[in-house]
Length: 265
Ligand code: HH2
Image (cartoon, rainbow, N blue to C red; front, side):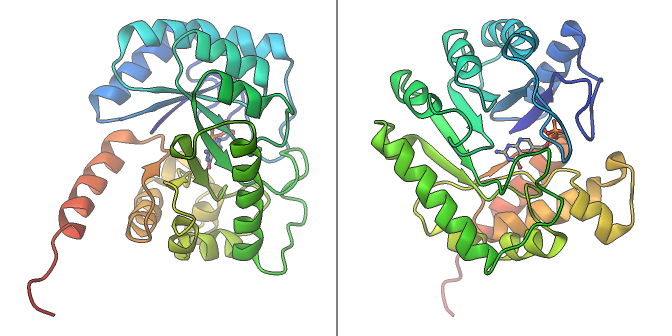
C-alpha cells in the first residue's frame, strides 16, 4: 500500500505532494513501482498534530481521489477519521476506509462504511495524535491492542460491515513506546490469529530512527525494509509504505521464500 500524503505537515513527506499534479504523478509512479493499493490522506496524524476542519480535508483529498479513480486500476483507500470525508471519498472512487481511530473518533463512521459496502482498516490508537506519545503505558501492550481491535471489530460488525471487509492494524507509533512497537511487531502472529488480514505501517517511523540514531525520516529506508521483513514473517498482509519499489522487491523475494515448504522435516 503506497502512501500519498496530501498534507503540508506529515512527518516524512509533508509538503511534497500538496500540488495536485505532483500528487497524481507520485501516485501513478507508486503504482508503476508495484503498489497494489493507494492510501490517500489529507490530515497528518503525527504525534502532536492537530485536527483540521472537514472542509479543509475534503478540499485536499476529494479532487485527487476522483482523478486517481479515473487513472489507476488499483483500489484507493482514504486515510481519514471523519465520516463525511470517508463518504465523499467512497462516492468519488475510493473503496477502502483507513480509520486510524478504529471507528472510535466519529460515531457515524461505522454506518458510513457499512452503507457503502466499503472495506475498512481498523487501526489501534491509544489517545489522540495531540497527546498519544506523551506517556504511553500498558499493562500488557499485546493484550490491550488485541482487546481494542476486538472492540473496533465488534462495532463494525454491529453496524453491518461484512467480516470479509475488515482489516486490522496494531497502529505502530500511535500511543506506543519503541519497546511497545517492537513487541507488537514480533507478535503480529497473535494479532493475525484474530482471523483477519493484518496491515502494518512501519514506514520511516520514529522507532526506526531511535534504533539507528537517524533523525531524518528519509534516512530510515533500510530500517523500514528490516521492519517490513519481520512483519511479513509474522504474518502481515498489507504494508503501508512510502518507498514502494524497495518494499515491493523485498516482499516479492520474501513471498517466494516463505511459500516453499520442505518435503521432509
Ligand atoms: N500511520 C500513519 C498514518 N496512517 N494508517 C494505518 N492503517 N497504519 C499506520 O501505521 C498509519 C496510518 C502515519 O504515517 P504518515 O501518513 O506517513 O504520516 P502523517 O500521519 O504525519 O501524515
